[in-house]
Length: 95
Image 1 (tube, rainbow, N blue to C red):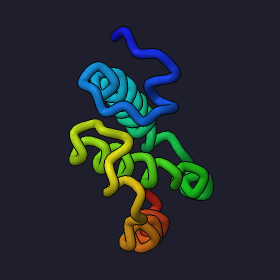
Image 2: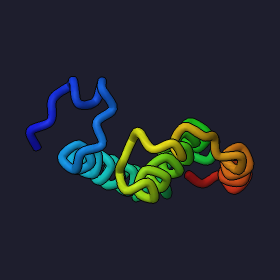
Image 3: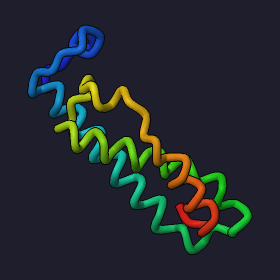
C-alpha cells in the first residue's frame, strides 16, 4: 500500500494507512474465526486460556466502527462493558 513505518509513527490518517489496517484487521478476524471453529474440541477447563479472544473481538469491532483509523479518539477509550463480557464468556465457557 506504499505505507512506511514513519506514517504510523506520525499518526497519519491517509487512506493507504487505513487500507493497511483494514488488511491486518481482516486477517486477524479470519484467524479468530478459525480458532473459534475448534471451540468444540477445547476442554472446558482450558477455555479460560482463550478469553483474550473476547478482547480481540471487541477491538476489531471498534476499529471497524472507526473506519480502520487506528488513531481515532474512540479507540483510546476503554470499553466499560468488556469485563462483564469476559465474565459472561467465562461463565458460559465459550470464547
